[in-house]
Length: 111
Length: 113
Image (cartoon, rainbow over all chains, first blue to last red):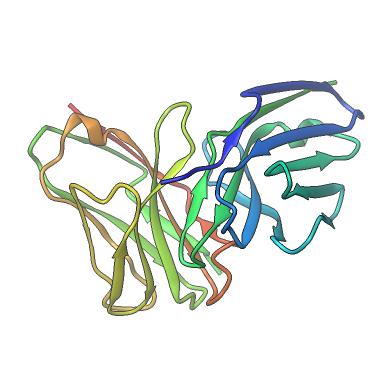
């Protein structure tokens, strides 16, 4: 089946910088796009999602942008902190009964 | 609430052995699912359930069975373990209509020799 993918496997930033993690998807029928964070040794944790009829959604220090024209999804983290260091996965929900995950981007934050 | 719990945390099996990975949630979530995560890969869906008595296959169901006799529990059975099933297994649950926002357990690391 079709799946989401990510542009870069790793991203290194300095504490306080803004981080942008990108994801490309291929299925235009997806109704939700979601970002998850996975810290070492733990299960993934929901961060934020966006419906397919939206372009932008903001949360606490995070913003998700959806560009349906080029099938691109991004997660922006403002004022990145060491606690943001983790693997970030984008995922899509097509049928409303299952998620398809991308491969993940490892974010490293140095202080 | 304990959230989603999984047992065991670690398991080593020999090829051909069978075992059951346990998953339980105390949030009264209707939807539950099992994923496997291999190095450098995202999570791949094995099986899922939208409610007690209802299960369906995901992306990689071969070699695994599930059942859902109660809302709380969703065990995953490996029928005859193979080295290709060495992986980290995650169970997750969510409210009805909120498959996007899933709550994941801590995972079971399985090694098949």
